[in-house]
Length: 373
Ligand SMILES: *Cc1c(COP(=O)(O)O)cnc(C)c1O
Image (cartoon, rainbow, N blue to C red):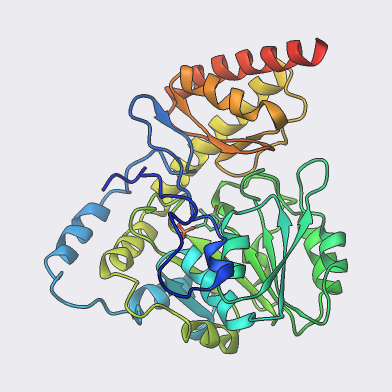
């Protein structure tokens, strides 16, 4: 199956059996489109292949495919505990941080409970909130596409069970600062779970940005989520992890889909952690390319593109979004549309930059002409 396959959205017809109406009302998760020709910059994937040594260990694991994986993941758990300076029971590993987001939501929130998050943010948040029957409380981003943490804190009620903070925020690529996060945590009741979703933390170069690394054991109600999908380039293998209090992680462990974390993913993550220097070189490369593209966009006149901190850029194209996607496509660039708000574009291969900037220039011209008319 092609990784770029578009899942059908919505229900095809009325089901012959009784199903939950709130589930039937949900659109299915939609992946970034594959690029038959051109650059696929629609899924925030890493343009680099897996790090050296990774394919060899995955190959070896393949020889054991007739066995179940060791889902307890003792080696990668111990290794991550060492990296983060915590005990193994303060680490939870699962088949992607999306799986962890679902596990924590299921552990914390049910019918009548509320989940607070910024919007726009990760498309999975509204969806995973509905699955256990909880109620979503989306809090609009600020006009400059950042989390409105004051409004989020104010949105917390007796029914709130989970608050999600995404930094860098997918899809706007803005960060929460360490100072803002501290102020926010001071306002959140200690018995409300906060998840700091840091899927793109490795790409952050702004020293003012919040970092889970500096927050380990600081707040008993905080869980930090990281993934091997983005910077580490293991999106296809599905592995992510969380750092937090043992009792919270234990609850999330009970909501796991059993045996979903493969041995392949575990050995690949271990081998990747052994390649810290190569990883850093790649991440630096992508971050430098991102900054270069951003400067070029500002020079083109894109004053409303927020400074990007992840491996992706947000174009607030508003009602011109569909047109922008088409122009990108005509330049061989597959971007992600967030109708009716904007376009998200991942930083990909070096060769994609010229096409990207030619397209963005054309889009900017087209929008400004339309605005003048
Ligand atoms: C990509 C992404 C994830 C990571 O997902 P995996 O399941 O680990 O591949 C988590 N959170 C956000 C905000 C993301 O963009």
